[in-house]
Amino acid sequence: MRGATRAAGGRAGQLWPRPPAPGPGPPPLLLLLAVLLGGAGAQYSSDLCSWKGSGLTHEAHRKEVEQVYLRCAAGTVEWMYPTGALIVNLRANTFSPSRHLTLCIKPLRGSSGANIYLEKTGELKLLVRDGDLGPGQAPCFSFEQGGLFVEATPQQDISRRTTGFQYELTGRRAGPDLHALSAPCRPCSHTEVLLAVCTSDFVVRGSIQKVIHEPERQESAIHLNVSRVYRQKSRVFRPAPEGEGGGWRGRVSTLLECGVRPGHGEFLFTGHMHFGEAWLGCAPRFKDFQRMYRDAEERGMNPCEMGTE
Image (cartoon, rainbow, N blue to C red; front, side, top):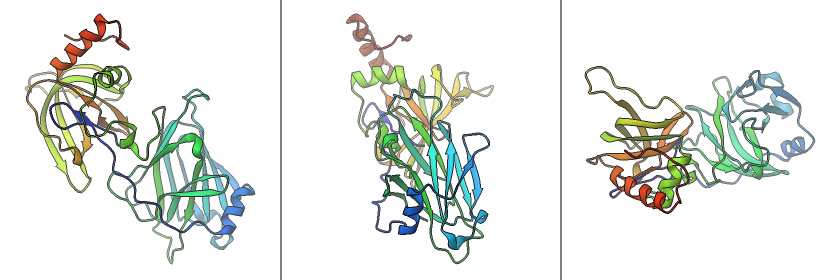
């Protein structure tokens, strides 16, 4: 996944690349009727988080629609030899039923053989067209907008076709893609910084070691030297090897379009995990963060507490 970044001092936050505009070509009427009538059957994942199945369980000419049920906040769907269609029913077991959720999907490398739609009451919106796997493509939508409908495309040979994607449910507000869940390429406001400190998956103090731009992925990899880890949900930052001066090392990603460059001095880096990767959020200079934190503290307006030394 991927997220958004904003770095103080000129460049900043990220907006994920927009997925291509959906084109024409809804599934055949026969498949839609099958959806409304409940499909051909149900396949349950063994771990309730991920599913792997085959279209060879039925004859291609029957255009069957299979139901898949998953009960996790994140996982993977892999459909080998795709024929007919799948309806992927997702239910999160880690969120309150009343909480508004956003669902993001990210095609696996080499995924092919099917289109992926958002489906609600028989209406379809194309999310990922077969073979159209742009860099960082990860469309998102409100969980209440509908479910996932995966329709196999006509193929002369399905023997080497596998349609696969990762999915991720988050409590953050829906946007057209993962980057839109965070901020655009601009510095964060004081309020946004203070909120990011409380809600981010990682909060660390450190400096930029180097920035590697990856034009083919439309991303930039920011390698960090970290002096203090305030919080991290995953092991993004690990102790530095002996002889490298102590602290921690790690990398976070941002969009290429934000033009992040190495900057001198210490920053407070915040951000979120998306599909196992760390994406930068607010990144003010640490001295600026100290000043805004103390000012908010004096006014009793800090949303949470943390050490600023």
